[in-house]
Image (cartoon, rainbow, N blue to C red):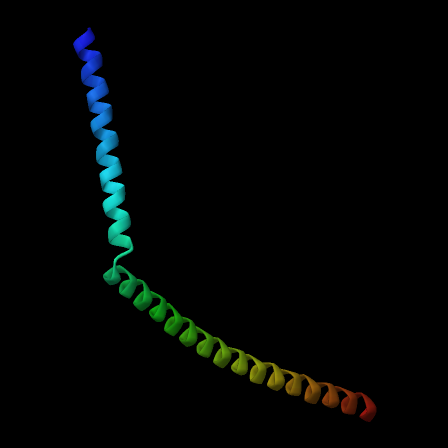
Length: 89
C-alpha cells in the first residue's frame, strides 16, 4: 500500500515537472523572433483583408444608394402619372 502511494506521488510530481518544462518551452517559442515575425505577418494579412472588405462594402453601399435613388424616381413618376390621370377624369 505504501509503495502505491509513493508511486502516485512520483507520478504526479513527474507530470507537474513535465507541465512546467512544456510551459516554459512554449513561452520561449512564443516569444522568439520567428514567432514575432509570424504574428506581424498575420496582423498585416488581417489588415489587408479588412481593407478589401471595406472597399467591397463601400461599393455595395454606393450601389444600394443608386438603387434607392432610382426606385424613388420611379415612385415619383408613378405618383405624377396617377395625379395626371385623376385630374383628367
